Image (cartoon, rainbow, N blue to C red; front, side, top):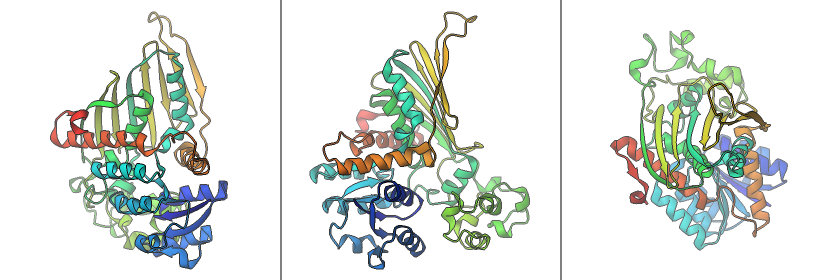
Length: 413
């Protein structure tokens, strides 16, 4: 099995690593505008110099030299990177979102069908044991039909500051709205659990905290020069030095020494004051959803939380399911007849796997490799056909947030 990486940042490298280490796939080429990332990937995967490219056009000039490509570039670059790959006949593992532009999403889907190529979108949550266990309980019918769901993504204040204030996804004009970039995952999970398309959607949210008026008195534009850094939890030294070699410090630079991190803070975007960046995406957003089968759901995204985790409560006709993906169990409750009786309650052990997203990254990669090796395999759990609806929902949520109107999905479609 031969693969090529287009976009050698953290996400692309994770998928390539699992394919290389666990499935003995050969990584034959790497494309990235960063020389540092190219060289690091080439060293890890033993890629010769003549197969390291800065420009994706130079790579595509070679024709088809691998079985598939992993595309993990910036959101607004996906379309121009995916379409030539489809035309060359590459199967594709595509980082979400497919594209921030719904018309581009549909064009990619149409072209994939016309050229008979597989596109698996990296909706890794479908592959976690946590959400898979919830799906199994729902589908068993044990608690009756789903009636309504409360779902929350707690982004983590340090994660939001890193990725959506200082980092690549801080500005929707350059990437995507946060509901698309971060939470098309969550739209996808709700679709999977409810097993119905969305009918109507409304959403509210804004950028409430990471604004200049909330900057500490006496603070400056960069952490290393700031006289009040000692009292600020977002000081770059606090955020990155204690976790050198790990995410998100590993994003700053390939040189994970103290000197390397400090140099990156001094010269790069991650040393900027979080209250003085060019960020414009929401740091909190709530979305209300009505599905075609009558199920309702609320989704709450918040960047102002202490840790990164998702919580969910699925309320069915005869009981409910509660889970926190930071824990290793799910609670299943059968409703009681009165307030004196607790009802039948049990816990379901999840055994979250190691790695990012509770093992979802690994299992997604293995499913993609399996699909490449067995062309007759059933449709992937996160094929592009299954992924499109989550993108429509995220697009509709952002449209509702901006307009203040309820969006009818049929009108959008």
